[in-house]
Amino acid sequence: RLVKISGLRLAPAFLPLPPLCMLGAVSAARLALRGLRLSARLSLAAGAVFAALVYSLLMLAAAQPRIKRKRRA
Image 1 (cartoon, rainbow, N blue to C red):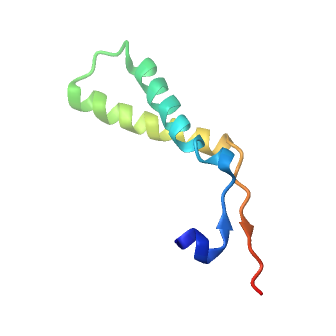
Image 2 (cartoon, one colour):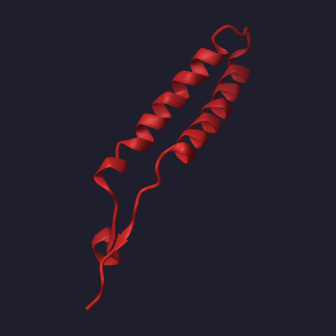
């Protein structure tokens, strides 16, 4: 409803991008931290920070969606 009222349109190709970037970020964090011998809490914290950093970088590197506005009559 909000999209309909505001007139914003997202490109359909953009919709799967955030979940795919998150999958890549979590996979990269798991591979990067696999060899380290950390406590459970430290491993969880380091993995979350690393995944958030990689996710942010992937989303910034990805093509930004083009937002089109409908003209009001």
